Length: 291
Image 1 (cartoon, rainbow, N blue to C red):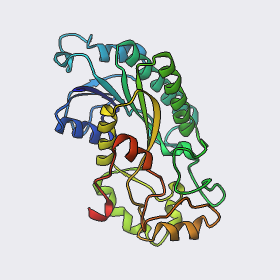
Image 2: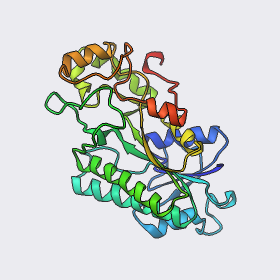
Image 3: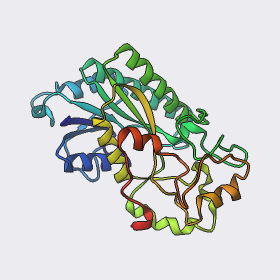
């Protein structure tokens, strides 16, 4: 697993993933519609909704100047490209872009012989934005929580998970790992966290969760290597919340009727990462409290 294609490698999570994989000795190609502002690997401009362009990128048939031609066939693909959140584009545009690009990337990967696909699903599939009028079924939320997409964006991710399951069924020797990423943060974003401490309702929408981009990259790398064949999904968040107030206090204040499963550590994440720890060997290394 040395040659890896990253779609959307110019985005927030993508930049961290490309950098981490390069630092770990991988040959990485970023395929995206715009180059990275922080380039660490070759870039190939590709419209990810265009099947021919994606197959061209994965087969290295782009001619002698293809930036990844000498590296050989990709061992895996990391699909991060998408309109990254609700309300950035009209709902129909978000849904069409995300669902078509996911289908095209999955299909092109399988047709070019790539059997390991790691891709960005989303915490939003679980019912976000949470509020007292739309509370979670229980907390901490885990992978057994009901799927409750509330926007075209989250619906595209929900259907992407079903797409992965069915494409694996058609190709039983493949691996599809969907990472339900929490709100991605870079170190400079932590400067904003102190402003949230007096207003816990400001971050209730995702149970005060986040994922450091560098830990997102770790989860991707471990997903590329985990001994697993099939289609599965994992919540990927940091081990703590964005708040100084304890997790139990936050639930009592904002979601007093929500059942709590098990004992909570003081600032323990309310987006459970137990499955990712158990199956992927994921363990967050970064925290805004240590930045």
